Length: 508
Ligand code: FRU
Image (cartoon, rainbow, N blue to C red):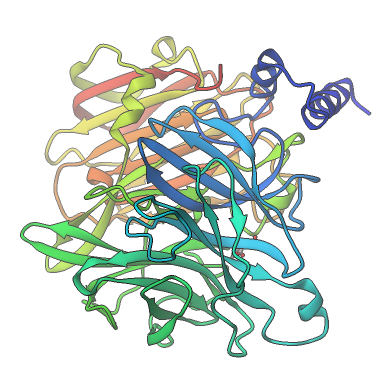
């Protein structure tokens, strides 16, 4: 075993034996490829974000977790909390598998009116609604091995108890029947559950979270169907004087750049049925690494989204040892129109500014051939923001590199009107044939000016352009951290402004 792996193993042993100190945690979060300003679990496997709930000033994040290995296995809900969506505190595991099965994905709500009766009069229980996935029933060849269950917390999310009447929503014989996302529908004073049911969504309603009535189905003949539908989310969003409804649906295969991604529909919801305004398939993120993302519950008018920053094609074999996978930066969602069409935009939450050390803003910057920004890019966690003058949207390449000639290229191809992220020579891709790719995204905006917001961590980049209309998230594994930054444009561009700021690490 390599010395590096031995070190990692001993660190992990320290964590699981409980001998971990604050100091060794901060060492763990300094591992090669460890995200510096993104959430990643202290150790072992993580996939989907679950139970995202804001309550009494705390953002709860639960996540699909297998604490015994760095590959997928019997699912638990790991837990972390934050008061600012930036700094995270790791908490004990919230839900363990039991006789009804593994704890698959789901959501959490604050039961403000104590409709479940789980709390004393006048108190508010927090409720987790999740899928119990029974491997025993699956092995027997049955179709009804996924059922929906509840857990509740009477101490504001610190500890959780499973409901004795589980499951509360029994499977009618649909093999993939999972990932309940529940919201309070104030207009009709009832709970709505949005459930992934194989190749479509089923909406259910309830007044007490325990008894559920089927309302409608959506999507058999709409959207992308390269794989089963998973991890849906339904929420209202303000647009000018109207309220629109957004339905997010993850799909396991058939994403624009391969593998898994999140598609969405914008439309109306009347407490029973969801009606989309158009029939096009839209993607929240064209990059390869944003899956199973949903929004936080109980955040008022803000719609805050976070996804799992990986892809089902290679998530289990990426070259990290002590832990596997991170989450995307939390993003605020809004609606924008292009022509008559509605689209979602994503922007990093404003709270991230807490850890961004803003640098001088350069104005009217000419990029002729190559502009070297290495001197302002001393760390590999950075935010780069570019604003283009009108009619300056021409071919450009933003290149991150190291002295081993590994490079990640983020760019725009004017002829094709496409953005791209090219990680074909960005370091290690030997672990999967699917990884060393160039990802492309059609430009959605029709404006003649543009802007870019780029978030760079040790092993990921998040590219937001045109006010967040186009988003691409991509992970990468350079042999040595990227330390050089250049912008290139063969035909020359004039930038209205340019900032290159460093981002402080969040793990101390
Ligand atoms: C999505 C998913 C969910 C499921 C969970 C199991 O990545 O397949 O549909 O609940 O992962 O870990």
